[in-house]
Image (cartoon, rainbow, N blue to C red):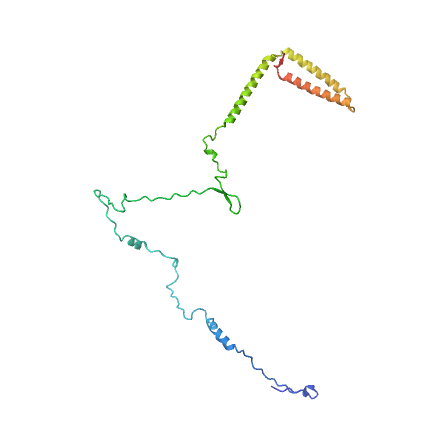
Length: 250
């Protein structure tokens, strides 16, 4: 290291010279173990894939549908299936064999009867269910013999109503015969109509002579009474003018 020289008046000339010593590098006592532990992993990471790879030839390229599973050929399957010879067709004069596979010895397979499921209604979100047959929700009444027929009590009631109507009609006929209704003639009708019109005109004149301010109870009641009488007379006049034939009781 080169020695630095300062001027004579500098204070740095009185300082002792400093000696720089390099410190040794600190090493861990576990360093060899760590090196041995990480060495195979690092060596494995040095290359990508195997070191020696067989290069594919240009003739062996990947073709379409080459990786899909293939079924055996039809000719081979037919050859395997048709190797065993079938027996010849029996003649018309030959009798059928009576062996274990004959039609006489064949037992009909018994099919099990499926169990009929019971109808139920689920009435809660937790799956609680109740049978429909004893609950009354199944319409069993349609299977009755008397289904669709009118009940006896309704028949009796309709008969009683019909009888009451007939009796009332007979009573009205008797009353009509006893009342001896007669028809008004055209002269009587016109006379009654003229009398009603004259009475209506008199009431109109009396109604117009009433004072405008009906401030007392007498005036108010008289006004209401006249209005009611005129309304009734107007309806009677309209009745006589509308109908030409009118019957009255003696």
